[in-house]
Image (cartoon, rainbow, N blue to C red; front, side):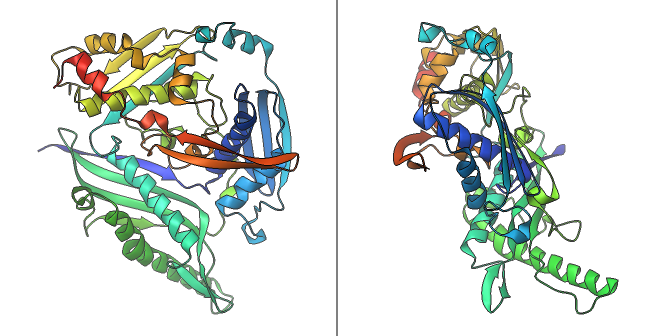
Length: 442
């Protein structure tokens, strides 16, 4: 039997690029909470002790930009000076300015339904039946490992050390994961081959003397302790939340690499500059399918880089869930200022279960009202003019669970107010009945 290996990675909420994404999306949420018509394209740069925010905005709202930024940083866990990036002390520089009138004229119309795309480009959506959330196993496991690691860090009950007589977690916010899965020739996962975890940590074991040998010994001891904790605490906690057949793929013989450089104390924005939009493969399908190149975070839904990618994922997921195919890739493309896509293409990789070509499947999808791909229809269908984006900016935009939450917005310029919103609406399987009817599936 022929097999192959495929690898995906994820990064935590404390990774510098993800810090930047979360700041950009938190700012977007603040504008949309006060003015749903806001047009926002917000980019963030983070580095040692400094945050720079730039971009274009058209809005009737006024937000407390500095406090929003600091709140995001504190909530991630950058809340002490030892990390060299502290939500209380970092500088915040704003270079936001008004949106270009030339771009705006292509988007806004007197008739809302005629709203044009905010830019040209192509977007992709992908789904497969490897996992319950219709995501590739490699990226699904990569995200799960880091979400669980963040939970452990916040709980401060495991993966800890004693400091000043008290128990503290040695984990710091910045971390990365990588999962390699062996697949058979029919693209079915056989086993997890390799797991890589790199996690920032306190220097919780000190050298016994000031020599290179003693420092190297202390570093080895820390790495060995973290490796044991990943093997005996983190991975079992993740496996306990998987389906039995998925957990069985992570055997005792899995290759485990933890902090391969030997030490990861210096990290976060102090260790590496972060920028909005540099983790687009982490945000989507871990390298499976395809990507059009456009980032998501900081962009309001008139930017089809974001909204159409969500809509394409919704199509792909509902087609797979309805039984049209085992794997589906949807490509959609737009011209700036035009409402209707210039193309919609579907690839089932030869896994279609209906007696139709991919071209015929695409033609049926294009004509389905529940898959209207004009920008205004996408915004309305998924409620994208609500403040729903901060939650998308870490651990992936796809494969998440739809949920309703109530969010409270604070500002020193106004009284606190709440918004009840629905998150990850593009992950719903609400179109499955319509798909089955359109394709004659019982």
